[in-house]
Amino acid sequence: MPLMTAAINRDDGFLLGAGFRYTGRDGFRKTPYTTIQELMITHSFETNAFRINYEGQWKEIVGKADFVLKGLADAPDNTMNFFGQGNGTVLDKSGDYKKFYRARFDLYQVDPSLRWHTGIKSTISFGPSLQYYHLNQEDNAGRSITQPGLIKSYDSISYSSNKAQVGLITNFVSNTRNNNTLPTKGYLLDINIHGYTGFNGNSKAFLQFKPEFTYYQKIDTGAVLVFSDRIGGGISLGNPAFYQSLLLGGQGNLLGYLQNRFAGQQMVFNNFQARLRLANVAGYILPGQLGLSGFYDVGRVWEKGESSNTFHQGIGGGLYFAPASLTVIQVLVGHSNEGWYPYISLNFRI
Image (cartoon, rainbow, N blue to C red; front, side, top):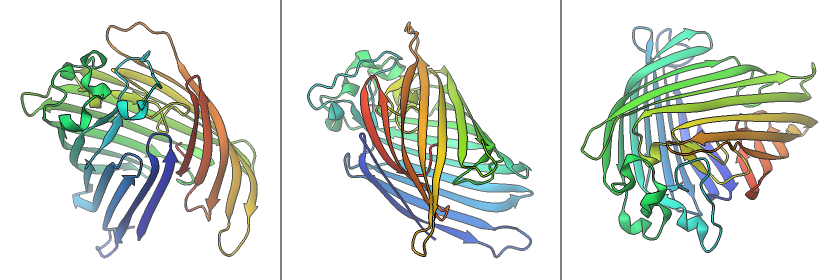
């Protein structure tokens, strides 16, 4: 089955992704599938960055455990906004500030794991992880990443050195949502714990704990009005590199700010969303649900040696359309004390 994704935002410009999903059902008594193979390649036309994402699943390979293989290549020309580490970093919009705050590096990660179904709607997985980082100094000349004062992690001087790390990842997921695309009730709990140790002299060890909990509740029996709320965050122990910081800002967890606007050792955020259905659009070509959505986001990060009591807030709303409940096309505008930011995307954040 072909896959496609698209988005528009202030950071990446126009994003376009294409790929495929294959589901095999030829195994004996292995329902609803024996294997799933999914590949997605996404390109940013603003930054020329690529992301290649692969996931393969094989049902009950070791007893009742599934084998899952994930591969991620943020390359070539991967771009990450970097404004420094801390909850009070300054955004200077003079000159070509977008380019100045973009760090360019390649990041590769491979995660093989075994996954057990602990219930009808919950799984736990465990396995090793390999991560490799490479930065070209010429691609980052004159950018924020070259200023050691902005990097408060151990790699403030060695940011351009290749880093190889090996570690372990465990992930618990419980999903009781009645619909993954347009949920009206239920919850999604996602707990990720990962730790790495240096595989070469330029890398150090660290551990991160990252939980997220999202709850959905329809307010009326017809699900015309639906509230959802997500609370999440993270704790870092040890010495993560700058690109392994916990990141706050943008479509991931704080609308109304640039992507990855704040980076730190610890993080907390809350995303509230209200969804109001205006009409069920009938038609042979593109039937679906049309509605309004509004949001309120709040969050902050903590960094060693910094004193800040600020919780950053973003508010906004827009329109959504869900054609045949297959996906969600959403047009939003977010506002904060740093400006107005438009977003066009497929699927809800939460």
